[in-house]
Amino acid sequence: MRLWESYKLRLRRRRLILRALRKSRELKCVQNNTKAIGKSDIILVSTMRNEAIRIPFFLQYYRDMGVNHFLFIDNGSADGVRAMLADQSDVSIWHTRGSYRAARFGVDWMNALQRRFCNGHWTLVVDPDEFLVYPFCDTRPLRALTEWLDGNETRSFSAMLLDMYPKGKLTRHSYQSGQNPMEIAKWFDAGNYTISRNQKLGNLWIQGGPRARKFFDGNPQKAPALNKIPLVKWHRNYVYTSSTHSLLPRGLNQVYETSGGERACGMLLHTKFLNTLTEKAAEELERREHYAGGAEYAAYAKALRDHPDLWTKSSEAYISWHQLETLGLMSKGSWA
Image (cartoon, rainbow, N blue to C red):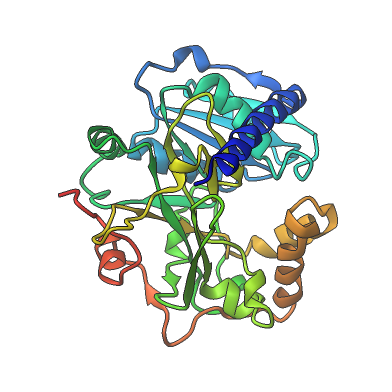
């Protein structure tokens, strides 16, 4: 990379850090258990709004995986989720009624908390409807993965977003609090993905799956990005630039092999497509706080009027991480 381009990226990173510090003033801590965070603890950071129905299983899933502490940013929830999380010693909560869009869709808030509390920690950034799977996750805890990454001097770990969906109309099954959402949304597209490279930041750009073919079928280039880098050995001078799609410094985006072979990566099972989506899409369409004025939720709301069935004869039922590796969607790389 040319020196001038490198300088501009460093300048951009400093500006994003300053922006995060300014936006942190919008956050009010309502439950602070961060003194309990140990030196080697794995931390999860998540922004949420009205996700009380999802939180019980979300906490169970990531606690079982080995997450030690949760930093939640609650963006104006009115469903009692903060009361649900009260007095849980591994949970800290910040509340804000600030604009999600003006905080770069929550990224500024998360960058601020990570700078303050996650320095030196392996940190996982996921939404309440995203569930990480990685090679050997059925037998090895998350700490085994992070220790292996440390041993290989690797600072970041990628995981493609895999949209999960039920067979039949989304309203066919009612999701219940505490339920594993994959019991309902257990199907996925094994193919139908396009990959390109962001020349400036070096990250991959992946699109496709059921959202591209069903909700953005007329303009698949506008479909949401599926590339994520959710797990990072955080440093206070790191920043996410666009959701968890890319970071600065630029080297953190080098999560794929460029000289032959494969590099270990995971998947984020994305369980948005439940019966709860209809109400969520209507709310977010009215708020217009998401990317492109809520264009994604506008597409959902429009298509959901016809109660679509995302399942096709080519859909695969999720079994395990081994299946995803066999299909070429993830890799264990050199981790044995």
